[in-house]
Structure formats: structure tokens, C-alpha cells
Amino acid sequence: MKNKSSSPALPSLDRLLSCAEAAARAGGAHALKHTHRRRIVAETFAHDVKLKLDRECQDVAERTIRKYFPRAVILGEETPMTPAKADMLWIIDPIDGTVNYFHGLPLWCCSVAVQVRGHTAAGAVYAPVLKECYTAHRERSSTCNGKPIAVAATRRLKDAVILTGLNKQNDLLNHSIALFKKLSRKSQKVRIMGSAALDICQVAAGRADAFYESGIYLWDAAAAALIVEQAGGRADIMATGPHYQLRIIASNGRLHSPLRRLIV
Image: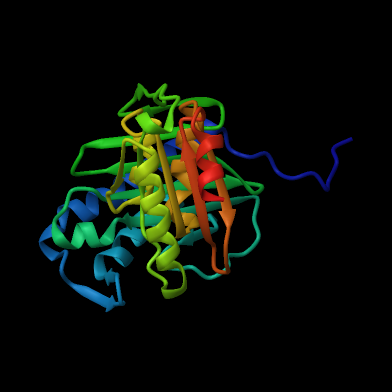
């Protein structure tokens, strides 16, 4: 006899990934098509800017998801309120690297992930200017444009390229700068590129060896963290505050322990 209290069957991982990729591509394509409108500002902050296109691109990604799953529960950067509880939660960053996009720099992306019962099951990160789409699900290795990718084999911090960002909150900026100096002395190079999701994907692709940032949000990292893990690396996401704020360490795995000792 069928158990009436059991949860309904969930979609396959392949279908979840197809939806995530379609949504990321749709949101990114909308931003790319409308780069001539990139300086239309909705709101400004001390070190950031919110664009009208941020909201538009999220709407495009949401509509794409709802073509697959009409009742989808969605958490997005543009709608950061706590969503209703559901077995599946879609997480969208419509333009990760908004300041880069605003100024015409090519390092920005659209990121879409889906969590199933609290764990990220599939994700896609699409960088339209670079023409790169990174994807992964829990039972499949990561790809870029359909081709397998893997983390680098770097074993020593002194040989590593580390990507990061600076937390500009007044009480944390000095700590971020001090950590930047420490990492600069211990590694080959430290770079700030301005898009956390895309940075983590560079680790997954073996172009960089590790990434660290504090003060970012779940939508910045949900898809990319899975992508680096399925490329053979490791990602630690640690909550640091309310409203989905976190810090993340992502690496090729070999450098994870020495990097954590420096940071944590």
C-alpha cells in the first residue's frame, strides 16, 4: 500500500540541470543584448550599484524556470526575502559582477542553482561575453560548454594563483586587507576580478587554484560551489550573518587545508 505521507517524486538531475542552464543562458543573453542600457541605475550604494537590468534579467531567468516548473519556489538577489519552504529551491544571481557589467568589463555572469531538500543538486554559470557556460549536477562531472573541466594539480601555496574580493564593510575592511597581504606573501599571485561565481568557476577549470571571499551571498556561490566540487575540488560555505550572507573557501582540494589555516 502506498505511503500517503511520502514526498512526491522529484525531477531527474538531468532535467534540473537543463532548466538551470536554460535560465542562466536566458538571463545572461538578456544582459548581453541590452549592454547599451547598462548605465541605467535603479539604486546606488557606497561601493556598489543596482541596475534596472538586474531586475529584468532575474525576471527572464524566473520565467524560464517556470516554463519547466510552474510552481517553482525562487530565491533571487533581487528578491532576497525568505521564500516559502519547498523540496526544491531555485537560487538566481541575475548579474554577478554588476559593477564590471556597468563599466563594460567582460567579467560578469548569470548564475542559477537549484537546491533539493537543502542541498545543491544542479547549477549553471553563464558568462556571455566570454561565451562560456559552466554546468554540473550532483552525479555528473563539471563541464564548460559541454566539455569536461578539472581543477589544477597545484600542491603548494607558493605556486598558487588565488582569487578573492575585499569585504568593504567598515568593521571588516581592515581584516580583508590584512588577509590580502598575507595571501600575497604566501602565494604566487592574488587577483581580484569582481565576480565571485565566475572566479570559483575559474578554480573549477584549473585556471586558478583557490578562491576566498567573505561578505558575499548564497546566490553568488550556490551554483559555482557545486561546479568546483564536481570538477574535483572542494568548497566550504560558512554562514556569517542574516539574509543569506556567507564566506566561502573554494580550492582544488590539495590547497584547502593550508588555505583554511591562513584564513580561519
